[in-house]
Image (tube, rainbow, N blue to C red; front, side, top):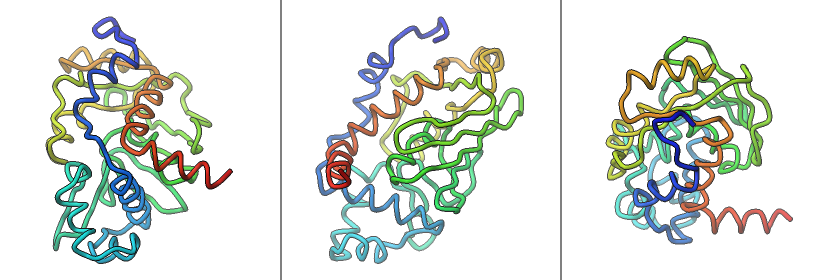
Length: 229
């Protein structure tokens, strides 16, 4: 890490974990199902989510509006869900391709999550905001399989200043500061002009987002792995 934040991934997670609620098993399942529906590439209606969950519309609506999942849901016109857990059907600088469909993520680190959460390989394209260089990664559900260029690093903003009380606040307080850089030199130039940000290696970014996913969806991910065994 750069010298302006020398905490380990475990220490960073301890600082960040207060932003992430305790998620029930029902909510975990609903979150992963909602991600799968969004991966179809179109906004998701409450009725569509209810069908996917095999639950009444009122229950699906409550899960998106009055549950541990709610701060991470972004609804658009007509109440249709346009993004959840950073996965978006509207363009951002961070592109994710899964099952041949192009989606986007609120921030660069988010892109590393979806191969596991969706149970399918993903291809990622992001752009270094300092150098302008395109960064490409290939993810399997278990790991980063390929990265170009090889010296990619990522930025984070200090977790202490995040606000995870709504999707809009998550984006403005955290996601808008979280990028990939083609080299450490490029990243260092960028963080020098963005107070409260710091750099992590790609492996550290991946480990950090996996800690968050285990907290939010760990029980359901373990069930899925057991069923696949």
